[in-house]
Length: 250
Image (cartoon, rainbow, N blue to C red; front, side):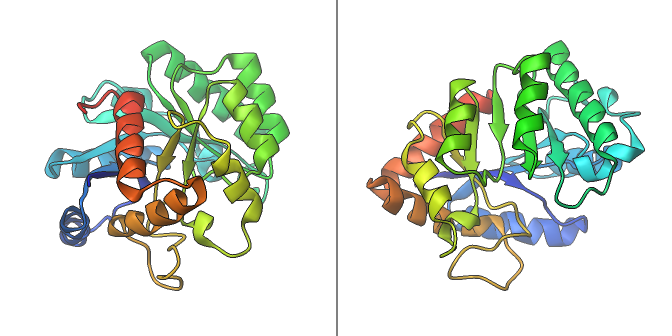
């Protein structure tokens, strides 16, 4: 089986990153998307993508960092290793940036995704209504994903009606996430991806440890169980979906 970790954050230390990438490959996770959360962090992601075979990156400004603006972001978007814009969006749980600033920076990044015809990676927390409103106003980029999807069936349907992909993390393995599993069950086979969001959200049975891309297999096992399919089918479907989403060779 071959796996894509659709969304992770590799260590800044290059030696530590090399160990994480090697462990992932040993587990069959041969493609990693290292996701940028600020302009400075996106530059680091690009350096790692150039360093490691099988690693690609995104460039974007997370809602937590929206207050720092987008200066320098556009310069990164033409690098061949940058396969998507984001993660960007809204986070009304922490409110680390003012909400009006979050909304403006989110809208500006949607505009950039359209301008450069790039996939868009969205982070949304406690902000579904505003997220959908901004997407409807700005227009949903052709390939858009809700990373670490945490909604239930209603939010899933809203996203799927807009042709948005849903990416599922280790949360799907948590006992207190039945609505998320219900959302997974109704997601079409060509509209889901698998992620770790490492080093966060380690899946069962690795709870309490720093997460790593190698553990995307645990997420996949639970997803296959929820969907009532064999693990190798889920691996192949999620690989194919990631290939299409990012424009990578299948």
